[in-house]
Picture 1: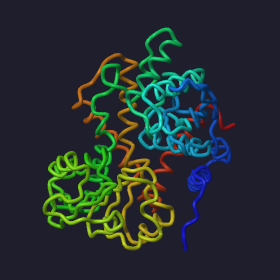
Picture 2: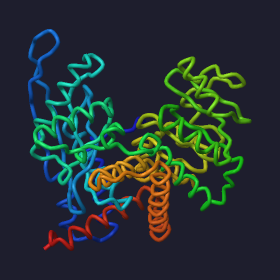
Picture 3: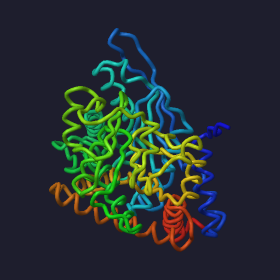
Picture 4: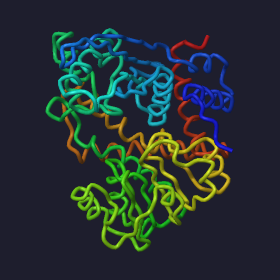
Length: 417
C-alpha cells in the first residue's frame, strides 16, 4: 500500500506535538509553536521583457523569534504554496535550535519558473520581492538566504535593493552572498562538511572504523560531491555515487576527485572507467557502512527501507526519509542522522556570515571550518545523549533537544504565563 502524502504543515505540527508530549511541556508551548507568528503574502508587478506587466505572488513566513531573529531561505519555484512555506519556516526553527543558533525559523518563496525568465526579469522579481517584504525583514528581524533556484547573485540584488530602502549598506540582511559584499569563506562546502562531521562522529559511537568504511552517496551535486571527497579524505572507500543521468558503482571503491573531473567533462558520473552503472534505487540498498542521501526528498520509503543495508544514514538532503521508512530503519537497527542535524552546516556558516557582517570583521576559511566542526560535534553530542536517555530515534531526539531549547527561551521571556 502506498504511503499517504501528507501536507508538510500537518507533518511538522505532528512532530512538534510529539516532542511537547514527550517532554511533558505546558500546553501553551504547543499552542504557540503549532503555527507561524507571522506569514505575509505579497503580490507585486514586474515589467517583462516584452513590455507586459505580470503580477508575481510571494510569501515570507516567520515562525518563532524567541531565541533571536528569524532565518531561512527564499525559493523561486512554480510549485511554491503557503503551507509549504509555513512548514519550512517551522523546520528552520528546530534546525537552528538543534545547533544552538540564536535564530528562529523563517522561509520565503515566489511562485515563478526562473528557467523561463531572462536574467533581467529574475533581477526584477528579486528586487520586487524584497521591496514587498522590506518592512518585516532586516539584520535585526529576519535574514533570508538562497534556496531552490536562488543563488548568491539574487542575494546581492536583494541586498542592494534593501540598502537603497535603508539608505545605507545593509549586508547583514542576507547570507549566502558573494564574498565581495560580505559573504563568508567556507559557505560553499558547509552543508557537506557538517554532514560528514556528524557521520564520522556516529561511526565512532557505533564502533565503525572509518578507514576502509564503505560509503554510498545518492546525488553527486554540490553537497554530495563534497561529502564524497571529505569521506574519502578521512580514509573511507567511496563505492557508489549517482546523478540525474546515471550512477557509478565499484565495490572496490574509486577516487571521488577523479569521478568529479569525469562528470565535469561528460555531464554525468555514468560510464566512469572501472565502474558499472547503478540506478538510484539500487544505490540506496547497497551493502555499505554509511549511506548519504544528498538528492531529493522522499527517497527512502516504505517500499525500499526494508532492503537498506547501511549501518548509518546521514541525511544531507532535506526530507529524504519518509516517516514509515524512518520507523522501518529504526527497527532494523540502522542509525539515521536526521536532516535537521546532518545538513545544518549550511545554516551554521550562514550564522557565521551574519556575525561577520555585524562585526565587519571576517574569518579565514580555516577558522570557519574549525568553528563549524566544533558546533556540529557539540550538537551531535546533545542529540546523541537525548537519544540515549530517552531510548528514541535520533530524529525524535533532535526534536526533543530543539523544542526544549525554544520552550526555555519562551519561558524566561514570560510568554508562558
